[in-house]
Length: 247
Length: 260
Image (tube, rainbow over all chains, first blue to last red; front, side, top):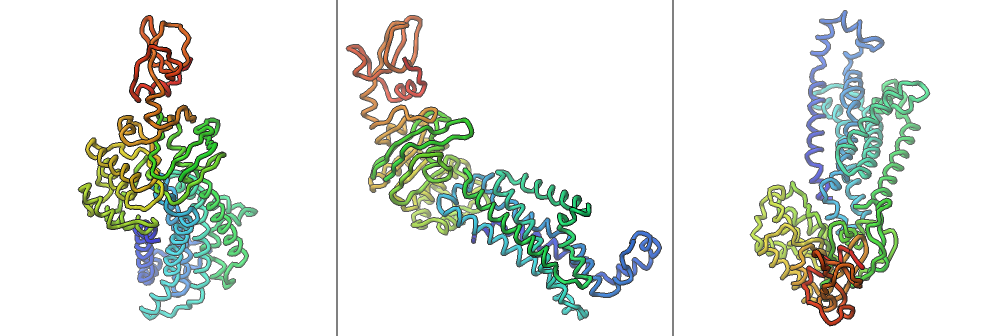
């Protein structure tokens, strides 16, 4: 586990830094954004469509729609991919998997790599989910935090889903590029196919961005269960592939 | 210590290891020899479980330590960190012994693996391996990329393992080195073991006979001139006129498998 933490320190710190930058270029600038929108009212109204621009004046709506529904939400699948893609493929590519597998069992290696990455990813995603709560209490904004925890569930499950898909590619491919390409390709394909009504369940962004939460519908339990089961199945298949893989 | 029986491994239609069997005893140094693609590395990888065998049995009585053909370590670690990581992952690893060996090899502990030459990485890998207490050491080309002085030092250390009662299974393409260190050898080609015995016995077993072109001989053709052919044959098939040859000649003739 120590090596795994060492391996992912650059990635996890980079993701942390990027998300903090995204948050702090958003949260402190509500007033500036509203001023800008007032200035260009005609253009904003023309392009905003059905989006309730006026509601952005409310702190809760502003943070939920812009942080969870936009900045953070949009990069959750990418975060899942970034945490998973090199876990096994980098060891194959660099020829270091042999070093591990003649010292520890395949089960140990798989579990230590996978669980360490999931743990670090979950801590970061949970932190990003409660970041608005922390920030609001520091700057004295009145914030309804209950939705944050509902979003946290969607974010964790959505992140785990894309992590598990990429993990599968990482156990299959012996280079680091293909797990990345296949995962990003799958994100694009499922998002586009999800625009077709009968296939809308394929679009995980609908779930991760949590539009239902903002409408007061709470956590989407059935989709949460569905994604969790698929994630666990994918992780198990990844293990079976790794267990039988010729190194 | 190690028993391999009927080991088979294929990659698609290509048979890499074809029904080979051998044993390595305690205190013995057993060398697997053969040209590139003979199946030596696949055999070792099947023994340590890195590759899944198609059939056959592998029995290891005790703990093993393995040195792979490609000596790759974590490039972003320093040598010291690599020792610590190895200590974390390896049962019965002696950190002090590793530091002592690295010091003997004049490897700077603060240096990053990425900055070491190929030969130095091999030395680090060997230091880590020799600091592991195992019953059998499985070494794939342990001296590849080392200078002759270092190669001799490593050969001494391998010999030292056998004096401590450890078994050693290793591959090498440097025949002079094999002659120096191995007790028994198996000569592999195209997945088969073509010859296996004590090195001295093999050297005694085969001789060279020169015959007129086209003459029938039960042996391996080694070379030919305009009118004559030279065969490596078993001494009992050689008749009265023969010449003793070196192990390198016997090896070359056998792996060419140009047999009559």
